[in-house]
Structure formats: structure tokens, C-alpha cells
Image (cartoon, one colour):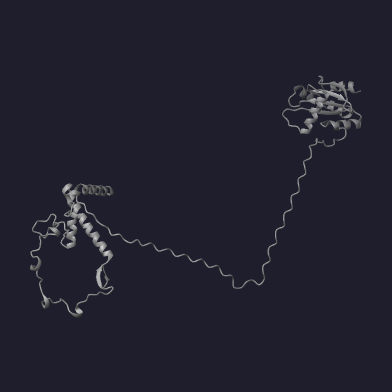
Length: 341
């Protein structure tokens, strides 16, 4: 709908430009309509014509279209002279002043007279413009396009701003109790500061696990070489050092199963020597200190294969180097006797 109104407005402007010369001059269509409106003779009813524009010659004329008066100069005499001219009112009947608030609607009292207000004048002018435009556009559209267009001038209304919201009243603070307590409450005691944590003692280096003291005349396999030397000195005995790979060396497993685990060997060893085992497992994790000790002994004595058996004195001096011998535990005991005794 807005596009249609815009198109009609543009068409109207174009028609005014094209038809300007036709209606230009003192006798233009708009001048005639304004003049007729001012004289009170213009009729904007669509069923009638406009005087001086498209009405028949026998109807009332407007402005310059009217013929000259029938008399001139002295020939034109007033309707009455002297006492013959009587006023239409006398005394209190003739009132030339007005009172404020008693003028008709749309008028106001100015200098003792009721005159139209500025708003009434503006409204009247808008109505006249509206009627003139409607009349002109309707005739043009009917003649050119056969479209009936009507313009409505809308009176602007005053915009009343919405009332401002009233500020909310602040809440009143709560009243203190009427009867305060007789005794003031004791303040809470501050919490005692926590004692700083004692620094942790540095971890002591790992020591080789010392086995429980064995019963008298019990066979033992020592893993601490210093302990083995100490016991050997106390009992004046040699030490049998066994370098082994207990979980991966086949000959080492055979040596343990056929000799060191047999009663014949253990009964001889517990009374005649100290047995020390330096093990080098691959699947079992040893304490770091024990691993360092065994590595140092292997380098010190030049051990290159397993099992290696060394017979040393209480100071660690090598007496005899040997290894696995077939024949079982009793045969191995005889082999040891030949070395020690």
C-alpha cells in the first residue's frame, strides 16, 4: 500500500510539472479555487462544479471573471441618507466587546472581539488545502487514468510524555530491641595460631637388611659381604663366595638345586665356612645398595661368568677359584674339603 501511495504522489508531481503551463498565470485553476474559497462562493462538493473554472456561464462568477458594476461615480447612490439610515441596534443591545471564555468554540477574545484562534485558523487552512487537493487530483485521475484518489490531512496531536515514575521510598532500618540485654556478651576468643609443622627429617640411606639372628648351628646364606667377613674372623673360617644369576642362568639353577639346597652341603657349610651369595637377577628388583655392592665385587674379583665360586679368607683374599662340579652335594663337599683342609 505504501508503494502505491508513493507511486501516486510521484505521478501527481509529474502531472503538475506537465500541466503547469496550462494552469499557470493569474487565472490558474488553484488561484481561482482559493479566490472562490475566500469569497465564500467555492463549492467543493464532487457533484457540483467550481465557479470560474468548469461551471456553466449562467452560474455565479468569481473575481475577475465577474462583469463590471452596472453604475459608476455619482450614479451609484447609497441605499439611504441622513436620518433615513438607522442603526440596527440601540443602547445595551449593541455590544462591541466580548468577555473571556464566552466566545464560540474555536474563537478567542482579542481586543474586545471574538476572533478565530491560531489552531482554528490552521485547521481551516488544512481543510481548504485538503479539499483543493482532493478536488484537483480526483479530476486529473478521473480524466487520465480513471482512478479515484483521495487525500486526508491528519491533524497532528500533541505527544504527552508518560508520567515519570515516583522514586521508591527507602526502607526504614529495623529498630533496635526496646530492652537491650543487661550484660554485654563476651567477645569470642581469637583462635590460637597453629604451630608450624616440624620439618621432616631427611630420609636415612638404605641399609642392607640384616637377617634375624639364626639359631645355633643353622645354615645361612649371607648377602652382606662385610657381615660375612666379620663372622669369618670371629670363627676363623673361610668364605665361599657364589656369583649367580638365580632367575635366568641355567647352570646357576642347577648348582642351587643339586648342591646348596641339599642337607649334605648345608650340614658341612654351617660348621666349616661362611656362605655369601652375590646374585644378579634380571626379573627381580634389588635394593640399590645391594646392587651397587654386587657390581663392585664382580669388578673387584674379575668375574665374567655364572656361576663362579671363590674360596677367600676372612680378609677377602682369594684361596681358590672353582665352580659347578657334577656328582651331587656329597661330591662337592669332598671338593671343598680338599681346598679348605
